[in-house]
Image 1: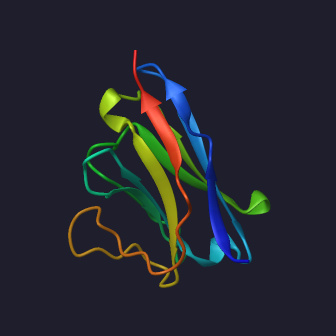
Image 2: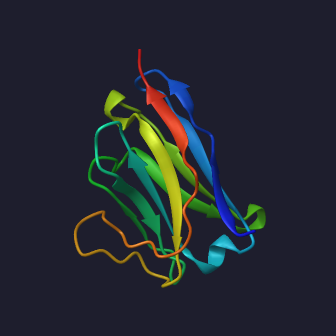
Length: 128
């Protein structure tokens, strides 16, 4: 069965850090562009970060630039999202997704197209 699985979510105080992991079964993450997205209660899903399989380029939403880092670990077939200096507004369910095109294609800012698979999400709560 082909699927993406996120892990690493949890509760943290403002200013803290978390590292999310995205792993796959049935395919190799290095072959696909991978994006991280999030959805807060009552809000639309938004793009957070994207890494291209074609050349390793990475992209970030303006709201997380300088705080979040996306990276790949080929040996573990995992894509990470390191989140530092977390804020209450980062609270959301975080999803990873794949796209077969090799690039982080978007018509508008961080709204990257993902035509592959989506994970089930992991909750991140930032609160004092």
